[in-house]
Length: 201
Image 1 (cartoon, rainbow, N blue to C red):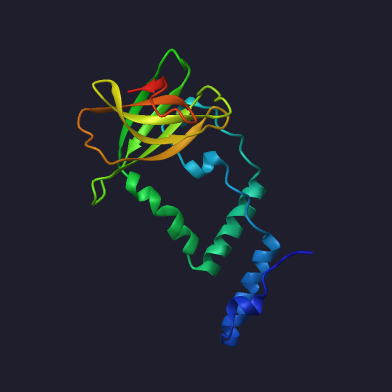
Image 2: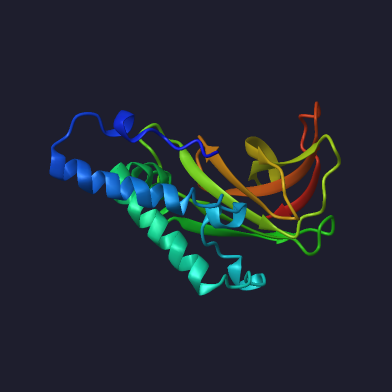
């Protein structure tokens, strides 16, 4: 038995012609079902590492058309609410500066880049890091991004974990970025000093 939302509760009291139109859309939404969950790769959006990785296999045309139709119907019914919430955060990275990180002997195959977004009114710099081919972490491990001065880590910008060697992290740098660099280190829970450096600018 499906747990479909009750149409009358959703729309309330509306004009008859509008009710008929909404009821038709409601029936289409129930028939289409919910769209599939986005994979972490799709949720992160395109990045500079795409040229280094194998592209995923193309899905069948029919599946993509059904998904597109379901999304279009949902957009009409919900008035663009989801689209507004989904796109807001990415505006900060539009036209941002891209900084490439190079691998160290600790992770010779690793690749990474940082997109530095627009500085906000409070002097914070949003950053998005995309890393690939990083070594697997121990059970209590994580990766940390540090801002560096003269090659030495001086301030943390955020942490992340990986899945299948790949990680995406949204970071923040409330620091002066002139003459700054970055490193990515391997950390263990409870250890706050910079660990082994696997990527560096």
